[in-house]
Length: 192
Image (cartoon, rainbow, N blue to C red; front, side, top):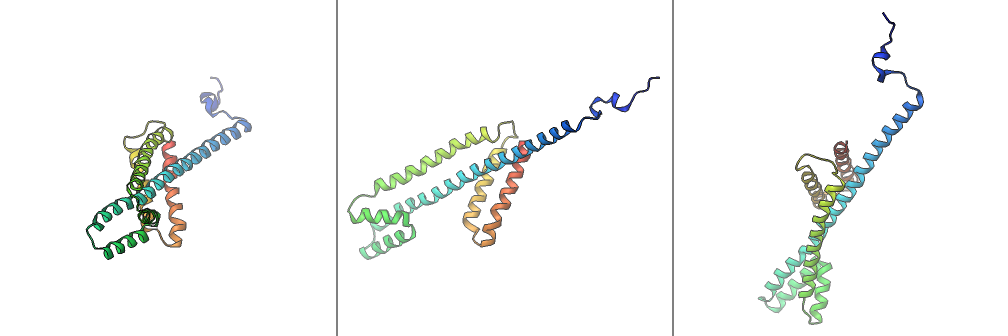
């Protein structure tokens, strides 16, 4: 019988020098940090663009209210029409000021409304194009079907929730951090 050691049967269990162990640990750490950085950068871009689209959609939705109200103003008496225009101008200052200046100059609001609607459509199609870009950049490998849609819709719902309900100082401070950490951890899991 030959005297053999345990490590001769399993060559991967041979004792290795400390420099290769340190290099393996360093490589492992770099991979994990890279995944973490990729998750946070991806989350930043997806969340930022979703928030921008939501805010653009909300500011451009005032155009529809103005169009409906201006159609109704034409059927009112002068005092009521002035009150409705004043309320709309105070409710939506980014649009009310511009429409009042055009009205006082006796110019049509059609071009202003068309420009806001064009802005809304441009941002919507930009968001659609970025959706495909994110699929390629964020989820480069094969993933379960519908995972990307679920992630994008979840981020959209979180943005709507923050916009509508997050008002207190403590929730402003902590809610976004916790949501970001949870989504980043999920993305790290997906990247692994």
